Structure formats: C-alpha cells, structure tokens
Amino acid sequence: MRKQRQLHRAGLVTNFGPKAARARRELQRVVAAVRKVIWKRPGLLVMWVDRDVRQARASGAGFFANEKLNAPYQGRVIGMGPRALLILRGRTPE
Image (cartoon, rainbow, N blue to C red; front, side, top):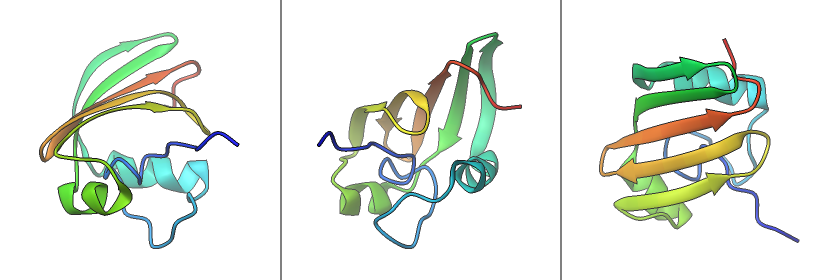
C-alpha cells in the first residue's frame, strides 16, 4: 500500500493523531498558516505558508523537505525551515 502524504506530516497543520483530519478541517487549519498567495489560476494554487519544523521532524520530514501530496489533495510541499511553498493542483479550494 502506498503511503499517503498529508499536510500534517509536512508540518503545515497541527493534527493530534497519526491519521489525517478530514479535508475540510485540514484546509481550515492551513488558512491560518498562509502568509501570501503567490499564484492563483484555474487548476493551480501556490501559497507561502508557515510550517512547524518540530512536528515535521517528528513525522519524518527534515528541515528541508520536498514531498508530493497524494491524498486527498494533489500537489507538492517544498519546506525550507519554518516556511514552505504549498502547491495545490486540480480543483483549488476557495
């Protein structure tokens, strides 16, 4: 079985268990971490967000991270210390 990469594993949102929260709840939590929307087009959303490095390290990601999200979102997280680029593809949330 393929391991699912989630936003809480990258340290973008706080989750209090190993399972992912529901997509709607996780997206509400990431809204508080958004610092700047860099690019917004149909099918692509790029944001500069805050990141919890301690949580990321506890989940297996390091200070620098480059992870592909595969459930329930499509995209990529590029982490650089306490900040990260969050790239969401497909139908972007409002």
